[in-house]
Length: 217
Ligand code: DX5
Ligand code: ZN
Image (cartoon, rainbow, N blue to C red; front, side, top):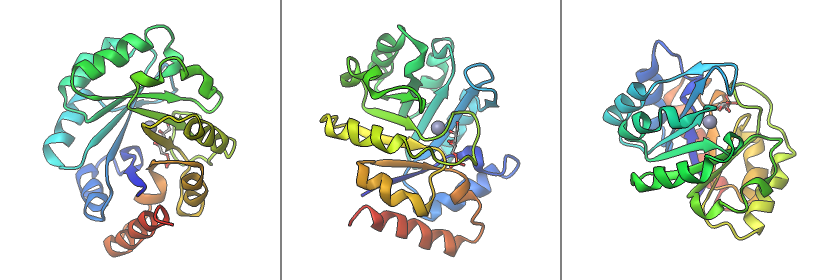
């Protein structure tokens, strides 16, 4: 069954606990935390302390996505904060394999993310070091963008290559386009705007259950 991971980037920053409680109570599976360094992407978001408090406050797994040029500078701080998965970008270069091993050695699931323009080929050599591969369906940095349909082919390519880990997509995912992502082989959908724009708890519960049943086709 598809896993739904709300991106808290789309939650109301001054009512974070209220908004996150609503999506968790509605049946979401993971929480996705988009960390940004204002360098790898032109935006800035979330610290290890926020991850630590989220871990204390909510029982669902924490899926932390480091959009950072130099994740090594804060890897220990984020690992200590207690994430269940920690994802770094393939575009950081030769540090990638060592950092993925360091994440796994800390007992944390290791993820690698690819921007829309980065081919799946970029992770062929190191994919056995990754428990999760995140295929960005928008240019990283901001929520509320439109999904890039070209990434569908990357999902199928990765799944058809026999990769057995989590295949996650992030950006512009909505109820209307989730079905084709699942048909391509997606296992985890990061959704921000499409979930946090729904304010009514019952309506959100119904939406989440519709999304979950899509995966059961
Ligand atoms: C981009 C962000 C977004 C966000 C989800 O760096 O990672 O993809 O999580 O975006 P929306 O609001 O489009 O679901
Ligand atoms: Zn993300």
